[in-house]
Length: 93
Image (cartoon, rainbow, N blue to C red; front, side, top):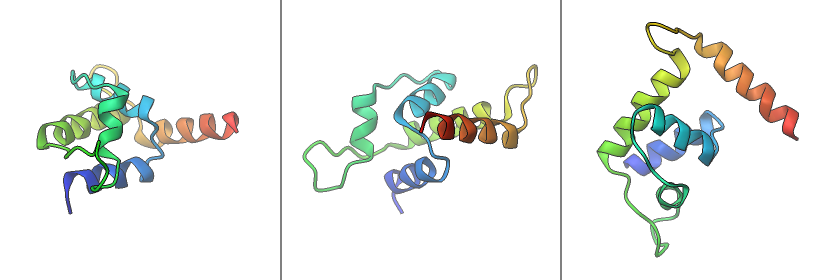
């Protein structure tokens, strides 16, 4: 399983949009544009496909931990974060 596959599966499982992922990566002090991000989620035979490197996935996972758990100074409950996001997404529909 490639880093791209792991990234795609996490994106679907957590119902993350590109904006959410960019924000999570910014929490890990890693800047990426939506265009660069979309290249990771394309099919391998697409001309704009890009391999997701270890650094990108590592920073995403570190940012995801901070996003869901918070910091030592400002802890969060992951279940509450996910429920709030789920309710927000249902409200938009």
